[in-house]
Length: 493
Image (cartoon, rainbow, N blue to C red; front, side, top):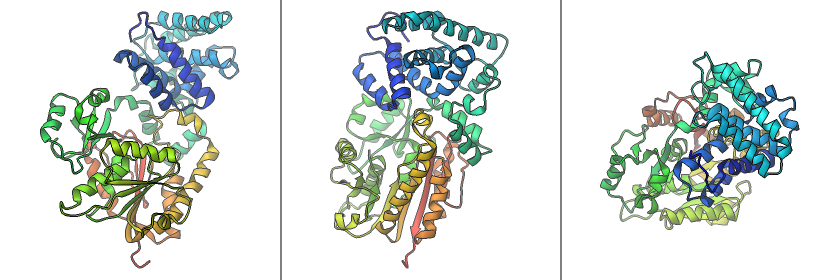
């Protein structure tokens, strides 16, 4: 990060974002995206500094608060919101950003406090920060465990806070930590560590070939220049592969191939939904809760390529709750040149009679990527930690059940229902599917798990199978926590 005078006070901007997230429930990704768009002229290092400071501070909030409370006679919860968030972003720099000088952190914090009319508290802020620095240095003076290294962060914080419980070390609400620990007792620590090391993963992008085709030389050129690499899940050449990793998404976005709508940013976990669809030419496909449309477009892309040149393809139908969500699908549909391959519908998935509304019969394949608690995405959306409440989990289970109740009638006998979530909560996953199959004439497709393992074998993934579906665990493959269950409807129904 360029520490010279800049027209944008990056720390002040970060402070505003973090305050909005932690005090007012703002969405971190949305706020950060808006700010980075506003200051698009910032160089790459400054943008990276701002992103890391905001994401890291929100992610580590519980741990940072414990560190500050260990020093301060005034608990964090009793501080003025401005002061506690200023201390949080400063503490994160002290503990996690080795490239920033200690004197710069203290000086910049004092300057911001003065600018925001908190001059009377600058001594308090400066004193807390210098105490944090001294304690950090004492902890690491003769120890190989250093701050700022994600591989040893937990060990560092355990030494710094020897009496702190594990949920504080991993910066998780206690109920959330307990849920994941009890659900995956032998794997929980790896999951928690993976949530903190998400920045190590490159972006995954999906190549939408559709019927427009794409010159293999253009793809190979992107690989040769280091803009893309074939995803380790692929066992195909660059000319044949669909999934790639992208070290620098901003560089790819400047390429004509991206601007022409051939590449879609999609985590490998989400891509597994499209790969598990047992598509064949002529299939009718419906996605509920579809916005922003990634899984719909993947399905449409595959279906188009399965359709004979002289055949016709039924458009994939994408539904979602509100006009705003559907407009996002339509915006992406235009970008990916899929106007004739995808149609949209505003529909509350818990309501009956969708088939009457559409004027059609049941579908060969229904995708239900339902609203969920998002506990598999804590690495990329750290603010979920504070937005989600224990009581929300039960509400989500009921909502999912209501959606599945309607979805059951949308599938033809012999057809497929593909259920997916981005959570690791068994109540929303395995237990939900078990209850559903007890109520409706569906059964898990036993071949689905093997297809997932084969697809991810190049990533070294061994799998976490269950009698109902497959759970993808972060840290065991290069993707987010995810759950998939492919169900077949009884033909005699």
